[in-house]
Amino acid sequence: MDFKSFTDDIEKNKWNVFGTEVYEDGKLTHSWGDTKGLYEIYSATKTILSVAVGIAWDRGLIDIDRSILDYIPEEYVHKMREEARNAYAKLSVKRFLTMSVDGFPFRAEGDNWLKYSLDIVPTAPEEERFSYSNISAYLVGAALHVAIGEDLGCFIEREIFAPLNIKEYEYDRSPEGIFYGASKIKLSVHDLSKIGLMLTGNGIYEGKRILSERYVNEATKVQIMNREGGYGFFIWKYRDGFSINGKLKQKCYCLPKKKLVITYLSHIEEDTPELKESMERNILGD
Image (cartoon, rainbow, N blue to C red; front, side, top):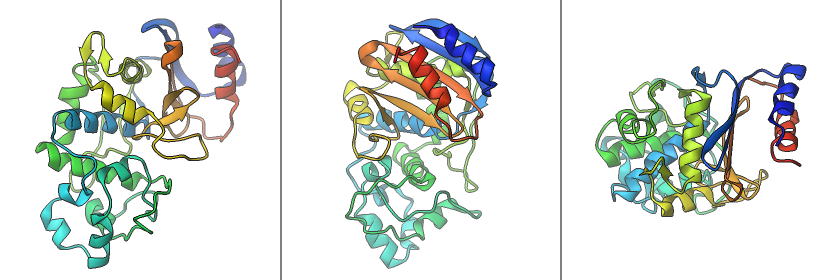
């Protein structure tokens, strides 16, 4: 491993990377830049939502094989158009976790995102097709809010952030007050690494079990194929492991067989592979 060459590449190319860390066998071995400041993690938020789903699933509070309508407030379900209600009735929570529901725009709009989302009629609901949309994650968050019977943001603070010793964070809600599970969390590099370490540890972090091994296995394996190599429950396949991803190159690469976790947060708008290639060359030894 040549961590210095990786950070030299960052500096030489003026890539806008805020900070990066490497963990080997659960121990922090390399660190560069600002790893403690808060930054927008964008869609890496979805993985934190997946962890929250897993905790609720472990406790029998939600059945991801049931229709998502079973966990949507009744007043919204009653107001749905019949065509939309019939389509949603065929769609399990798991279908939304795996982004296998087609027909959504990328994000909800207006002053009531739940109503907006439930007005959309999914395309061919019986057919599983990878279709990435923030609406899928938003609806999972709305369903989980009902399933646990409390504010989802508070649940995440207590059941995920507190056991991981994550003390500094920010998150946002939809206009109607539901935790926005698709994006909008701010974390540090160091604290996003903790999510990766917990998942790499089969649900255990520093001796504390956060998630069942069964859920971690389901969440991190390929549930549906896509051009990136596969997708689990709001988690991306990466080589023989998996990754937590957000736009503008927010990354936490988890390689359990190598006992490696590599995290960086950045703001890189160009859709270029150079940062990832440098990481793979210098840290993974490709």
